[in-house]
Image (cartoon, rainbow, N blue to C red; front, side, top):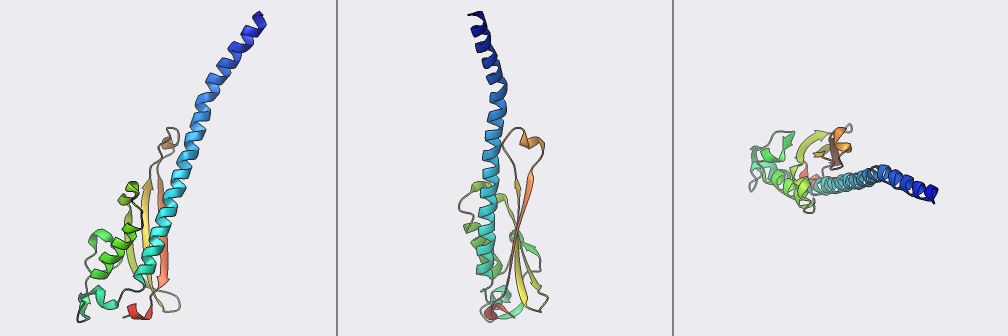
Length: 161
């Protein structure tokens, strides 16, 4: 009977040692799931924002959009906080609407840029940078994860100056 009690005590000690490690692994899996979810939401938002941006009229980027004249209001690349033209403000709002009320993602930095491709086609490029902060105690020692999501598309003829 004494050996049976000793085995039960040994199992209890083994369980007490393994349980924190098991809980840490489970919490890390939830954190990895959160990171994948945030990346997926950001990827969808930037892609939908770029789709919205490629059909913006060139006039909406100008000082006087109704007459389609004047200088361009914004210089590129620009952050959404610096956007002044109607088109860029609409693009930023569209991207923010696609974040689907995930409050953590509202701290993302959205950057809009216009460029020219290798085939001389005008491009619009939208980038989102987000600092993912894990909540699992052990993973926070490794540090935060910077997520960078980018999308680029060729402007449609209505948007070409």
